[in-house]
Length: 346
Ligand SMILES: NC(=O)c1ccc[n+]([C@@H]2O[C@H](COP(=O)([O-])OP(=O)(O)OC[C@H]3O[C@@H](n4cnc5c(N)ncnc54)[C@H](OP(=O)(O)O)[C@@H]3O)[C@@H](O)[C@H]2O)c1
Image (cartoon, rainbow, N blue to C red; front, side, top):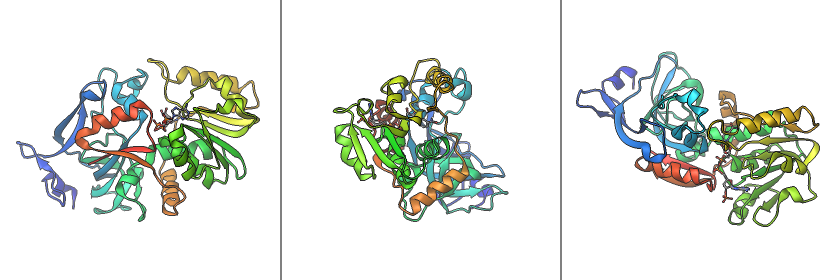
């Protein structure tokens, strides 16, 4: 289907039409920052792909804590990027999987009908999303659209933390807190794939899940405090930061790497103050304290697609919600007890 057809409302999945005759789509829209109740189910204009873009008919879109921060506009720091007074985007969501509906003139790698997954910077809780072609790769044959949608942000964060920031080597010991959550469930599997000896920290009812992901050891945090055992780790990916940096460092080897990765913090700056402190402290110790911000790349998405295709990594889906209940999906994510990923189906 060509773009011109889409403009005229044509195509396999025939988008709706406004009273003026323009092609429209259903989307979860926010006109102001606030709690999930700010989301309205609205009929809005269909985005049109530019030369290098792909119009994706969204099949599923995962949501994660970062989407909640952006929707609420808190910490306020996020408003510098997403709109000072009101959200510039209007449609929440970053991760998506679906089917190519149309491609721009310069796109040669993808064609209408291809199943793709990746990330959009213009919102994904909608029937269609317009995405630069470089943000997408093909869905591996062994993966459903819902599972593919669960991957981009969380798995890429885990991959970059372990491979790029910590440079995990075979035989190293890696501890992951929040190992039952979105980032953690991928981190356990990726650390195993990198050849590490992996320990997951989780609550009692998630012990079996984390073990099933391949963890060599599981610490139930309701019974054991990993910072108070004799065990020392080469790498700690701390997705929860339930304890101060100084305490978590006790469980690190003298030259180990600690990645504080919880996005939580104060109302204005979020984790920024804590992260600056970690970086400064890092200059005074042989331990590496490395907070970081994940940045999606096509190459890392290809690496993940490969790991998914070979079965080294399998997304864990906690719950799915229909688009009309996107607000409930974000409420659930905000509660912080997700087991794997939460996906909105469209
Ligand atoms: N650096 C980056 O660029 C980047 C990118 C993406 C995400 N993040 C951050 O990464 C963090 C994790 O994200 P996520 O999507 O994985 O969150 P999530 O899906 O909400 O998972 C959090 C998990 O932690 C578990 N948990 C809670 N308290 C715990 C404790 N004391 N010890 C161990 N586990 C505990 C929860 O289960 P129970 O409550 O049942 O134990 C839940 O399974 C977030 O703060 C997010 O902002 C950072």
